[in-house]
Length: 443
Image (cartoon, rainbow, N blue to C red; front, side, top):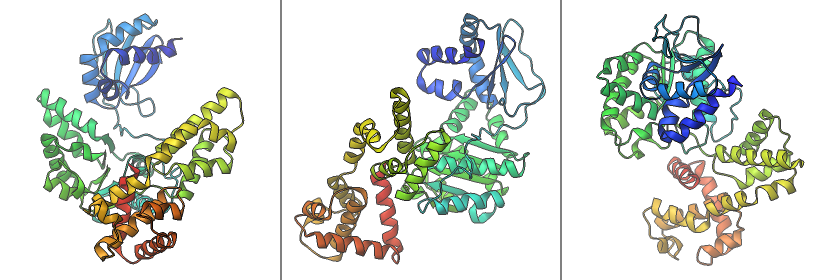
């Protein structure tokens, strides 16, 4: 069928060109058929330029092989286009240009506040994101930086902000870019000696959403350009939302003045979800797929897989696929069988010895000091922290944890867990240490 032409073309292109090129320039294209013409919608002019210059001749050859007459590039998307969009064609006819396309946000419409699963680990981030939509540009949350390990829902929240802003104001010019997209567009503008066009696209937007800003590390020219764009938007009270995998001052390879900008406004940590949130996520994702998951299976995944949402989704996908393939009903026994290797790998990923090493490194201690007999405060508190983390992140019993800490009694471990829990409610620095260590151990 002609409708299958683009997936088949993309399969060939993926085998012929570097994966990074395919991901950056070809995967964003959205296909539509107009008769025997394949229309490919690109999010912006930069991608149109790259595809037209580097890939379109080959795309046209493949399209003709699969029965299509011509290929046309248009700026926009199937959902957001209007009549007579700007076009660039590679076909027997010459390229044409028509009326400009309405602003394309690059947003994934699937990510909303309604389908975001809220828990204690992300409640503050969710509330901050919602505040942005109600008063964008307000200095209290501009910029908003959501930071934490991968797979915790930062991109979901960022996209939910953009989608809600556009729901409230359909004319809002909200631009979402991954950091690698920003970098690629900037480099291409340098090569084309057209940096003014690159800068111009940011001057009239209402909100800029940049994902994974830590990948600007080491890219000095890109950081310089982003620094100036940041200042223009901030001074104009245009909303800036960013995500990163760590707090700005912990980023290596980022210039101090840009670190300072990233920390302005409201930085909010997104932590790994707790047990209840993980279980709710599994049940919600299963419902989205139309798959029935018994509560005990959701609880199994939530208990065994502590790191991030993506791992939970991957386990759910595996479980669903194997159930469909075998025709078996999803039960606790089936889940344990189907996910045996995955659950074993998850259990091995966080060990007591790994926790001890990470905690010792975090507090700049030698491992023998952490495990030793000395009870000075500078050693006792990190030791209690390591014990509490072992209880939180592993399935080892209190006696087993005590044994791993130089043969200490299980009552010592129990006291450490209670002490750390109590101090987290009153000691802000210790709570920050706990959150950072959880993120390190969940990466």
